[in-house]
Amino acid sequence: MKPKYYDHFHCTADKCPMTCCMQWKIAVDEETYEGWKDREFKGKTLDSFVMESDNGKIICLNEERKCPFLNPKGLCSLVLEHGETILSQTCDIFPRQIHDFEGRRECSLVSCCPAVVDLFYREDEVEFTYPLEKESIDLLFSIRNLMIEIVKNKKYPLPFSLLMAFYILLDIYGKNELTTGELSQYREESLLEELSVKIHEVESSWEDTFEEDNELWLDMVENYRKEGLYAEYIEELSRLAEELTEQYDRRKIRKKMDSFQEAFGKYENLFRNYLVSEFFTNMLIPEADLEGMVIMMQWIAMEFVLIRHGLFLKWLQDGESISYETVRDYMVVISRMTGYDEEDIFEYMENSFQSLVWEWGYMALITGID
Ligand code: SF4
Image (cartoon, rainbow, N blue to C red; front, side, top):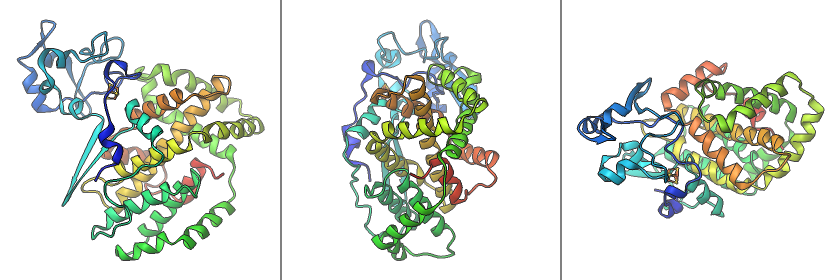
């Protein structure tokens, strides 16, 4: 199973506006590392460009925070000198992600690559090579597909459809037993309509959403700021976020957020496709259980609000305008910043929130209700 745009992906290489060879931790697997011990670059063996990190071996970036093998033309010196087989698994596969389950393989593309975001932008809607509504004996697979269907449904605006999906997922999580056949009740239009009306009746305030998202932003960027990573994207915005926390004028913020929502609304389809892709790629991973799916949906929602909040700050800073290229940059940067392993995501969630599984109201607070 894969999204139909999967086969249309092409790396733009030296034309890429934000190469994957900069700023982040590029993993080197053990097999590649061993093979690098007797290969050279600029008179040094390749393994000397590798260092240990908390999560295994990574390439040491140069002073410009770029991969030392990236040449001035934006191409990989290792590939040019030794051929593609020299690459570590991470570099070889990026931005593709492959998950093997019993009886099926799922292939997707991650939003950490600008060429992938361009695909999301061009697609009217994400279609898959396997029908989402088709019944399966794999309950988690069917639940994940149902969540995608809900977020894909253009009848409900974003982030509304995300809130509807989370409500239903929590409802399923709260049940002791459920069969794939019983899932069809959640597809009934009357139920979705009723849910949508109920959510509209919930009292919410964009000012509270702003406060919480601003805190989430400062928390997420903290370590990257200390390490000087992604500085050109996050440093000035984070200072603005700190200023806004200190001199917070609720009425002014409310007005600004209203205007921003209008500008942001132009990218609704892009964000819907992005969420569909995130649900497909990250909500269900091999060995996951239902609780894991709930946590991953929370993480994806957090990623979404962080991108939106970053864009809000950028929009304020840039005189209240926003281009597609800016939206793409922040989608890529925040996706790279939040691209943690499942174990680290659980740890972050455990340390940062009162409970691992959020109440629906918390999701509504950070996404806001239009
Ligand atoms: S980020 Fe994507 S388009 Fe850019 S160099 Fe990497 S794979 Fe290619």
